[in-house]
Image 1 (cartoon, one colour):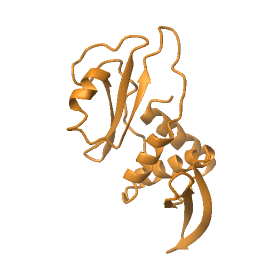
Image 2 (cartoon, rainbow, N blue to C red):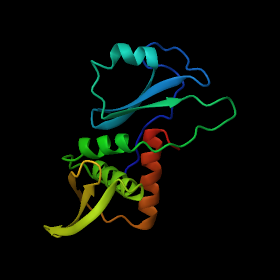
Image 3 (cartoon, rainbow, N blue to C red):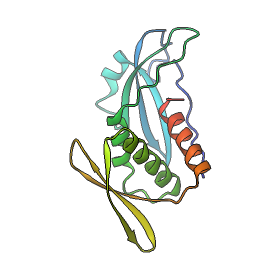
Length: 163
């Protein structure tokens, strides 16, 4: 099991270096950089100026919590679907694990529904349907045990800044 080296929300705009203040909305973007997933946070104004030139895997808007309060966890299905699609042809085992956990989260949210279980070359493949778009996804099962699933889910939440 790999560990993703992603920083938590920095509360600093990646473009301007300006501090993001409590209750301020900001954009978090997930990029692939030299085989690693990298998260960067931007003020809304900075994002408007740079978003056309960037090609993130996914991005989402959040709000800086007030001092002493934790941010409320909101699972954005579209961000998860973007991650699922972006990592679809990546054979890297850490990305396969990440994609599998994202698929499980989307199943838990009832965005993806189980259709079938296939076997290809001795590997089980989950066949899932997106209930909104009707798109079919084939997700290889990396055969993670319960502890590995919990750890991988924590890593996914950390990458997306939801922990």
